Image 1 (cartoon, one colour):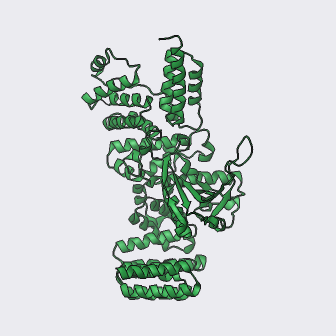
Image 2 (tube, helix red, strand yellow; image 1 turned 45 degrees about the vertical axis):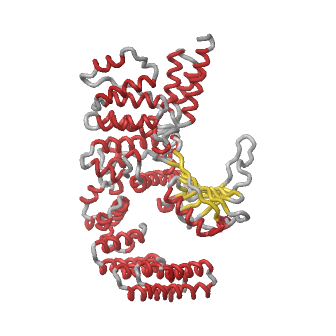
Image 3 (cartoon, rainbow, N blue to C red; image 1 turned 90 degrees about the horizontal axis):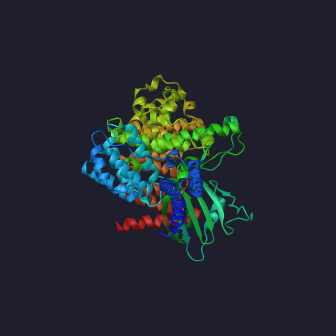
Length: 587
């Protein structure tokens, strides 16, 4: 080897490490720089790089940890020694092969499989490493749950790295929309109450906007209403960002962390722009490790809140996101299950899924402990989340056993709704509703609906009564469903002067349709149409009736819709009515 070769090798490894880090492979970056120090102890560039990695404030602990091989399980030392003899274990590819051979010969040798996974991770072969770690977890979950959880936390880090895109769970979603030539129908952005313009990013050197031709917006889940004072601000005053919008000449670029909310915006843009949309593409890429929890912070607070109110609402936002939204999202790290479903299996004795669920939560916990996000999390104890999913808390004193908001399903089932005060009952209802079981939810919602209307004032009442109507229909009780709608109308009249009456009356008509009572449904629809003179009420009625096979009343509703649309000049309603007639003729 030439005299300059070692320096070239060292320089190459240092740069390779930085490349790994840029591609979200910090475990491989660490291995590169440690290899440099084995070749040249105290080498300045590698020492500096390792110091930077160890102290990066926005990476979770598992992405900065120094991983070590596990020692042989009892009785396997001799076999390991025989396989290692004559092998160069400084060569990570060779070491991965040796450990893989050991594990292939004896699938119960979980430590060999774990070590193979570590070797693969150090090489940046993340997909293969995750597969090896999965096999190790399967083998050791029952006997070494703590070590198995450590292995799966590592797998959670690896799945966000370059090369493992198809295994990533936390994604950034982007939808570029191209307008037809000569069209730019995006003026609607400036007219919507739920869309607000935001400042363009500025180049820190020149002070000029980085995207001079672009205009930026945030599309919120609801318009802003009257701004609350700091003392009265509640989580209900928060707004969630459905999409960030970049408007360029001839196109829009929508992006967000929640694919469900983003698709709602895409559908609305398509409705508003119509045939002026030329192309719509959908893209997704893993979130950088530093932004794995970006979805938690896709919220906006009313302006003018003091520091205390902001801190309180940040904490409430964390609780709401993890305990009601995140728990329902499927994750590849849990075999495609949601955390709620994984928790159910864990509590039925599935030790593997229990270990994986604990590992997934542990990584979220590490994200919340970073210096860069500590103020945002406001000390949120992830033992609340463990409890919510039926796992044992690491510190039972960190949670309030009477706090219904963080209770698991079985704990909620032990509560007696009629014995709860209004506040606790409302909290228990929201907690149950977030778990997605209508029967459990109905236990609390049914009692709550019959309390004084003021007990429902802070709740999403449409969601509450919808859960009751679904439950009654699933139970075969049409009269029960209609009784719930009557109560919804009564509460709505008392609390907000009947603002949602149209929605509840539409439910009544749909219940009649569902049970085959077309005449009763038409009577409700006719009353709504007479009250609103809205062609879209008639269109919705026609679609419901036609879909249920009530052709004659459905056709009548289409003609009513067309008459109303022509009187009001609603071209979109006219077009939709004609489409329904054509569909009916084709049928």
